[in-house]
Length: 232
Ligand code: C5P
Image (cartoon, rainbow, N blue to C red; front, side):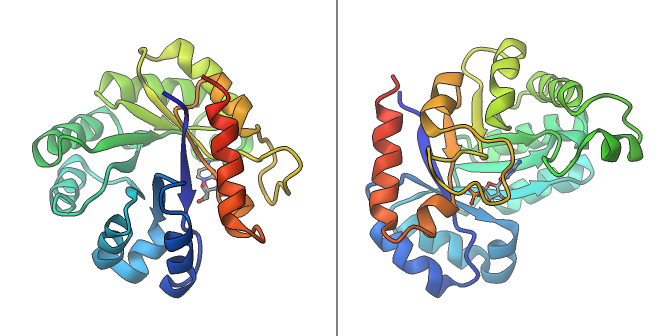
């Protein structure tokens, strides 16, 4: 199965997002709705994106006590979402309860663990009491998430090879930090091309600005799809 393409709808208004939804139908299978858009436009917006023909990745990065996270997953059950994120640092009990709630409320939903945010470096990790390197902490949290039953994680494409060694076969690895050759890196400092991320073992890549800021978003998305399909 070729690596799948996810577009993050990191635009400020629904009016800015709607032309993208129209143009990219049939080319981009997934749209990521983040905390900002979900907070501003809520469930109706998620429904609109799904009605436009997309699978929805709801990137809420849940992090709370086990009961609250499980109840939140129950509350999200009516929504047409196919991926949802939670913080693995919420702990094994929280992730286990989240997975139980997901299995009961929405068996098709893939719960994805977020490990160490890429905004963290070793200094910031030490400030919150973790003496290890980000790579060690990513590995620890991903293994913990896997033990709790999570079937996928969000990570940098540069972490995929190590995580593939740590995690069971079939684990879904969703990677932002991907840039087509020659594209502006923006604020992403460590990037891989779509083909390299696919070869490394990403099951899904998240690519935003190189598509929605392109003069022709459809051609940009088609080129990335073609690159992904060339790696099988
Ligand atoms: O525009 P760009 O391709 O950089 O967008 C990447 C998307 O992935 C954004 O929505 C960003 O918030 C998200 N993301 C990321 N790095 C992470 C986690 C999420 O870039 N570690």
